[in-house]
Each structure stands twice: as structure tokens, then as C-alpha cells.
Image (cartoon, rainbow, N blue to C red; front, side):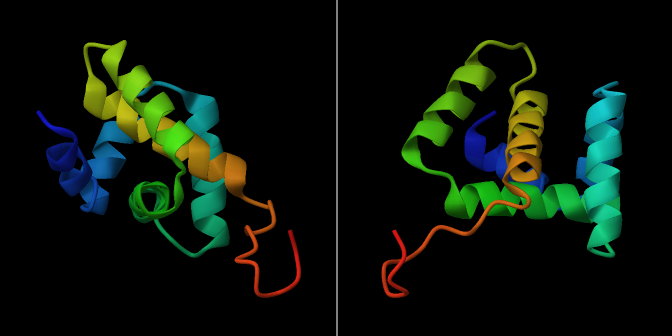
Length: 105
């Protein structure tokens, strides 16, 4: 399965929610459910949005780290979802990067 196929699957919140339930990582699930509730989303919707956020905003180093994580497992789809979800959760509360027009760095 190629990365594009994996990412297309994660557009469907029900597919993402089912994949998350197979992780068995209660801490990650609890964090994601808390974030989802804060946005008025289901767990699947939040996770799908996390995949889109990573796809749109991750830098080259983050993509390389994702590829490395996917290469070290027998289930690259699960590794991809976990990596992107953890990345999105870790970004919550951080200031958005400045585009340069606001005078920030």
C-alpha cells in the first residue's frame, strides 16, 4: 500500500475511528477524545482532521520522521495514523508560525 492510499482511507472518520480502537493505547485515545470534544467533533473527525493538518503543515523533517516510523513496522497505516495524531496533539496550544508579514519571527 502506498502512502496516498493510506491517507485517502483516513479521510473517512469511521475508518479512522476503527483504526484508533485497534491501537490499544488508552492514553493516546483519551488525549484525542479530549481534543475532539473541545472542538465538538467525534474521535474519527478529529483524527481525520489531524491527518489533513499534518499533510498540509508538516515540514520536511517531520515527513522524513513519519517515513522512518512507517518503515519500522509491519503495519505502516497504523504507524502513519499514530504519528500524525501524536503530532497534531503536540501542536495544540503552540503559536502558529508567522508568515513574516506580521513582524514576528
